[in-house]
Image 1: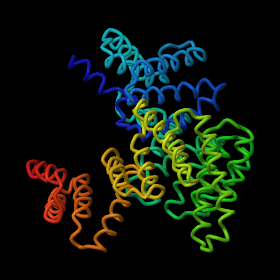
Image 2 (image 1 turned 180 degrees about the horizontal axis):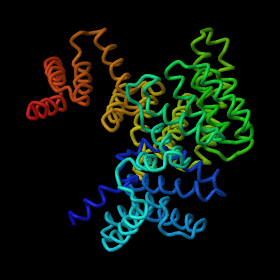
Image 3 (image 1 turned 60 degrees about the vertical axis):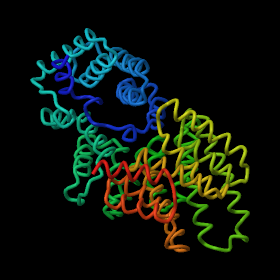
Length: 443
């Protein structure tokens, strides 16, 4: 069995790329399945990624089903059973059969991978696309695949000159000059380094070449929404929706744009004179979130945000009902539960004015996924709550308990111990004592 696992660890597939659920956008995959329904080559890759998400969620049978579908679609396009394009699919199939204790099937797929590698004189490794590029540097599929993989996962400290993802996106565009989505991906990264002129030129070029491509319009809309051209973003997303009216992802992007508009209006002051405009925008947000939740089943972020907006409308019972449904969906899918905790904390804090419950759910979110956007926002909100309490009373035990929890989750044990000790000195609490004892025992 150990020898089998060693072989599996050497494969190049989703199971060996150290991906997490948050590295793969489930709703984006659902969108691709709808948009690429006639493009079997693209669908084979999408089903591979979807299969791995299902595995991370704990659904092994669905994982196997999606991989089987991927293989079936490939065979509908090609007669060759040992093509290099199948390395990832066979690798994934070997892994899932191993996890399901189908060891003979696992061995069979390992042999298929080995045969492909022998034909290619190709050594398996974790970085599939990079190795493929080393062998065939001009193949467009490998260049695009590696560029997208880097785009989804690379967020290190780089400059515009040494960023691997920018370098690879440029290379991919050189090999596939008509791939307009790659151009928008490059633009999205360029603006992170304040290269606005080139970024906007790339997006405009993509729009000029593909004015009626729903995904190009959608990504371009996302680009403009991130860099505060909200009206342009909304216009592009509305056009994308006309071309693909059942796109939950596009509805969600429109909702996010209108949320930014709402925030801008509220920040401008004169809230009473603008209240009708705010309400109109809130109606748009709710409409698009409802459509996103309808057309993309199990869209946790859209469902959570929708529940929060029902709360903003003072429809508390409807909000609670929606939140409970979303909690159940997230638990059933084993996906994005931390997101629901964050939005429910926001609902408790701002709609029900229940700080105790808000703290509980911010903590749950931070504990589950500290590196996510929602996890970071939860840490910020908890710090703000602690700061507010300490401004009123420097000996507030609850504030020090919150800070102790934050430090504990960040792995800063000495500061966490200090926080819990101060919390206990100002306020009796069994939870603080339990955490303090656990921290002391672990040091």
